[in-house]
Length: 262
Ligand code: C2E
Ligand code: MG
Ligand code: MG
Image (cartoon, rainbow, N blue to C red; front, side, top):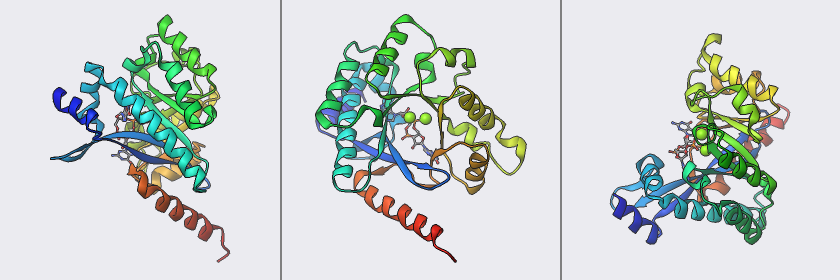
């Protein structure tokens, strides 16, 4: 698989899919999360679960990550140029990438080359990658912050880290993991984890995005507990760039019809 993945990278078989992040109250499309896919000649589109861990173990994640970042930044600016909107971009960075000494300068170069304002880039790092609080990790997070971008802890709560640890990190946002959102069903007790995480984030002044939102019940619950943003199949699965304009248009139509008097 390692050889095949190496081949895939050199043969440009890696793709970026985009999953919309939507304001729960207004249905405005705020931004997109870039998610890697492997367009396998035999098996079709493969999700990251099939290749990201191998990419991490072998170090190939660095090349893949660099390419995803550059491609997605360019795409966001292209959408802006074409008048589709000014979107924010979320990009995942793995533990292995965080240990790259030139990560910060690489991101800085991509921002300069693409002209994407740093404030519109959000770097997502998994809780497990940053909660060890090593000096090296803290330094890199602080350096990333000096670029002016947004730093988010992805899938918060899954790694059982504490409020105390979260408070020490120079982060702006967290994402609520799908496992907590999935537990939001009909009964009030169901969403207790999601409610606790949203409350924690609010108390620390952090921005919150709920992931894996699939049902109206979940949307209503998140709205009630003042989580402003969501992403999930309720709005859209991750889609190729070509499908984004149509998605944005459909959301605009929906907002227009909601604001029209009956
Ligand atoms: P993540 O960053 O937490 O991304 C969210 C995942 O939740 C995505 O899975 C997305 O497709 C899935 N998701 C979102 N809404 C729903 C929903 O309503 N229902 C269901 N069933 N799933 C939903 P995906 O694309 O398979 O990515 C999995 C993970 O792979 C990502 O989790 C991220 O940690 C990693 N990953 C993806 N692309 C990259 C990349 O370019 N670099 C690195 N380092 N990691 C990546
Ligand atoms: Mg993510
Ligand atoms: Mg996540």
